[in-house]
Image (tube, rainbow, N blue to C red; front, side, top):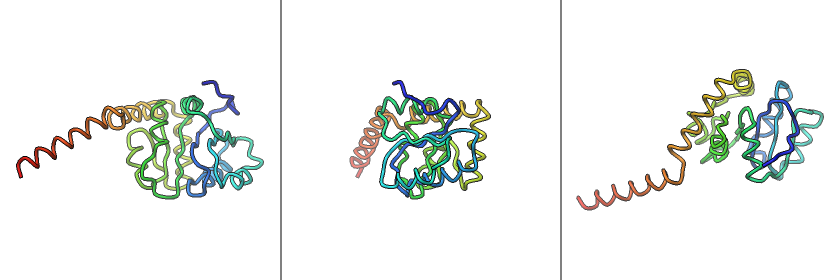
Length: 183
């Protein structure tokens, strides 16, 4: 779907609820120091006004509000990487899978299941300086970015498709039936 991009420069993408626990304020702090690419923020939430105020005057940070799934696919495909900056333990990183579907790598916080999901197609940041290092690596080294995007997409295809989920589910049922038959 056509998207009216707010920038022609390379960009990193955040997609999610604009709530304090999602850590967008951390990204804005980082982008106060990092001006080599833009930050596009997609989503709405109760913390949006505070985030907009924090980003005031930073022309390389763009809030896009709500976007359709078709628009999101376009945004993911054009991003250097998707940033997942959660400050709380995430049980599953849906955003990482959406990025992987577009062959886009992710840079995630070390909270909950995010590092495991991003293990093949992304990087894990530990602090602001480490995040900047990872962003600069992916911005300046397209081969690394491409390789991570391919690996992330492969992870999606081998572990997280509906067909693979059903195969795993029915295999488990079969194993349990066999175990029960031996009891």
